[in-house]
Amino acid sequence: MQSLSASQLAEWLAASRSSPDDRHGRPPPLLLDVREPWEFELCHLDGSLLLPMQTVPARIKELAPDAEIVVICHHGVRSRQVGSFLERCGFKSIYNLTGGVDAWANDVDPAMRKY
Image (cartoon, rainbow, N blue to C red; front, side):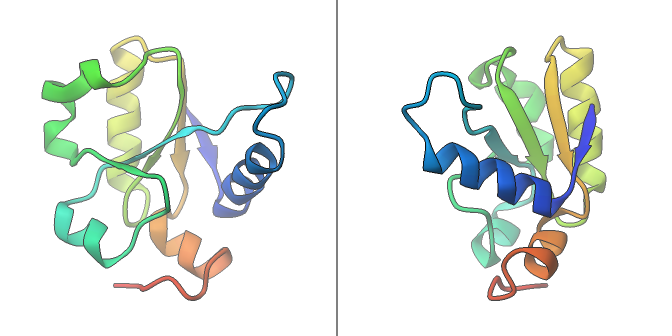
């Protein structure tokens, strides 16, 4: 599993949005938010898929093993655990958002609600 800072993720998302039809560019990752629904309602990254941590084992077939997946939580601890689980299940391109949505709010989107 690789670590990804909020700034690095912002750059990746901006690059994939600026050239969505470019077959040679890097496609956007799946943003997998593993927080609880109440946390997701407070704030989340646009386009994120909510899959609370405890539901991941039962819903793992909803995820493509070959997709680039950025796992997101509040501070990066739960997402690291889920990322490790996904790797043990054969997923190859897993990234942990270091610092979670808190880092995103601090470094990328100061207007994002914090909790």
